Every structure is written in structure tokens, then in C-alpha cells.
Image 1 (cartoon, each protein chain N blue to C red):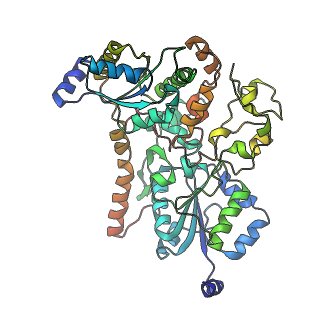
Image 2 (image 1 turned 45 degrees about the vertical axis):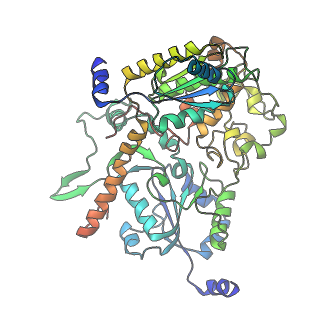
Image 3 (image 1 turned 30 degrees about the vertical axis):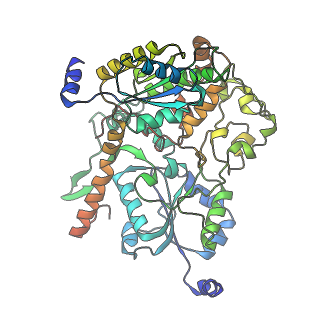
Length: 173
Length: 334
């Protein structure tokens, strides 16, 4: 594992995290961390949503498919949701989605749900730093690159057929 | 316009081809299921290629001029180099290439193999499975010598693909298999030139619940205390499956099949794929089902969700190859 970390240092790779933060608690907390001049890892790209219950599992899968190394979801603490039930909906989706992701080979550490209230700027800092550390140990997911690699075999046949047409010979005649 | 239409009747009949890739043969069966309606179709077209039913060789197709086939209906997922090659050939020779059936549209049941590597699959099929006897350890080879002749076999690919992940597709006819009503509608639309925009799915763009006979019994607030599978419970033939705690893919599946499974007292398994607004059918039904689980604490939520032991097989039964993740991510690329 340490080897991977060292490699990452030498290649300059560091994890990219997509964070979905709810407008009423976690995004406000991230804002608070900012105005309090707290320093935390810059690996996180925050997307503000109105409620953690608004986060469609498709968003999470798309983030991974497009190259995110981790997805972080932040919502209000239980019983504190601005829309009463939204964070519970997210929690239930999270439980099954995380199981499904590990069935698809994506480590559970790559998808994280945290309850962070508007007053918990330091928790934002702690959670982001902790996640960056764990993902750095895990190494890149790079699913966007993997999908390109998978499709090289389609291209290889294209080239093959083309070459055969040049020669005038065809397989499976 | 009118002149053009008149002229069409003097033109030769449109040429149609059918081909199967990684499929079970059910889609071919559907063409026959058109019953006497097939006679009307056969009258209006020339079938120029249909390996399952008629004797044509690949060389016959190669000899045809480009774009000379009006429409090719290709069913089955793409899993071998031969299927890729035929998909390319038919694309080149056809004006319209139609992905026919779930496997061609979204990868279908064969697409579930994307949870395993080629090595895992070949090891199981040629060695590990309980019914296999293979003492000499024979494995498929892409070429070998037989009586001094070089013989070629197609290469087994690392992953399963939908047709449009290999070649451009003009229209999609979904279903496992496509039902006779939408097949007839699709063929009719093609013959009459009533064509929707390229890339359309030739089925209504609304969820199955809309035409389900149980629609009226769907509760406004679904609340799951448990999930059961159809064999674990005697199902009420008139009550919405979701109200009975049974996973039904209806809410995230396109209608058009006339709700045949719910009418036969079985829940929808999602073969028509998602509507146009949904990118990932599995994620969408997961979202809907989970949100409506009743408990609020992790342990009780997990207990309810234990009723879905295989989320991939349940939510992506026909669509893993076209899902956002496409394939188990930590498998080798080659």
C-alpha cells in the first residue's frame, strides 16, 4: 500500500472527490469552514443540492463513471432535515447503493455519507481530509480511463477487418 | 410527394435482414409469433438474410452493395469477434440498423456476465461447472490446424456490449422478447416511412405503471417493511406488487408490452429498459424503492434491504452493459 502512495506522490496523482452537500446544513458548514479560514484538502469539488434526499443514485454512478475517485454526500443530522424526511431517504439509498457498488468492485471507502450540521465547519475539514487520506491509500479508480481501455478491443477488430479487406481475405467466410 | 409514393410501388420490394448475436433465440421466435400478420410483412419485403430460418452465407451479404438492405434487425448482445464483425457488415450494407430485443438494446441477460472476467467465465464453463467433464483441459482456440487446413474460431471478448456500443444504431425495439404488438408497429412504421428521429426507441416513452391493470391499487405512499421475492409469497393477483413488498421494475421501465408479466401475476423485471429521461435504470429503481423503506435507523433499514440479496441481478437484469458503470470495475481489461 505504501508503494502505491509513493507512486502517487511521484506521478502527482491525488484523488478527485465529488461532494454533494445539502443547502441547509452541510453546504453552509463548508461555507463556515471557508469564512473561518480552516484549511482542508483541495481535492473536493462541491455540488450544492437542496437536500441530500435530492441526490439521485444516478448522480453518484455518473460521478464514478466520469472519473471521480470518491463521492461524498453531506446532509443534515437525523431529525434535522429541512424537508423532514430527505436525509432518511438518502440514508436508505446509501445503504443499498454502497452494497451494490462493492458488488461492482468499487470499494466502500469511495462512497461516504456524513451528517454535518451548519455549525460543524470543522467536521467538513475533518471528513474531507480523512477521505482524501483513505483514497490516496486506495489509489485511483479512473473508471473513465478503464472504460476507454475496455473499448480498445472493439477498435482492434475494426483495424483487423480493415487489414483483411486490404488483403482481400476475410475470416468466417 | 404523391408521385414519389406512387413510384415506390413500382420499385423493388424493400430488403430486410435478420441476424442473431449473443441471444437465446426468443427474439427470432417473436418474428414467428406475428402469426398470420407475418404473411402481410413477407408480401411487402424481400428477406435477404436470416440465418436462423433460411440458408444464406455471410459471403452473400458481403457481395451486396452498401446500403442495399433497407433494414437489418439485429438481436442479441455483442460478445464475440464474429458478432462484432457481422454487426459492422450489416451496418455497412443497411440503410437502417435496428437493435431488436433487450440484448441488442441494452446488453440483456448476457450482459450480466460483465460481473466476471473472461478467465472466470471460461474457467467455470470449461472446468469448474458441476456438469463439465474435461479431463484433457480443452479450451477454445481462435485458430488451429485440422488435416492441414487452418481453421478459425471467433474470439471471446472480455465484456458484453449492446449493439450501439459497437456500431451506430438507428432504432431500438426493446423487450425480452419484443412483443408482437410493438414488432408489428415497428415494421409497419418502417415500411410506411413513418419514422421518428434517429436513435428513438420504438415503444411508448412512459413507465409501465401507466398501462398496468393494477395501477389503481398502487398506494400513494408506498412503505416497505420487508421485500419478498415472488416464490416466497402467494401473490394477490389484483394488488400492486409494490404494495405486497415485491420488487417490481415497472416504475423505472418503459411501457409497450401491455403489462404482460403483471397480468400473469409476476412482477415486471424491466426488459423494456428505461424511458428516455433515465440514464441508468437500476439506479433509478434503487432510488425509488429505497426511499420508501419504512425504518429510519441503519440496522432496521439493512434488515429490510436484505430482502434484495442481489441488487445487480435484480435491477440490471437486462441493462448492465448499458448502465453507467457497464462492468465490474476491478476486472482485467484484457
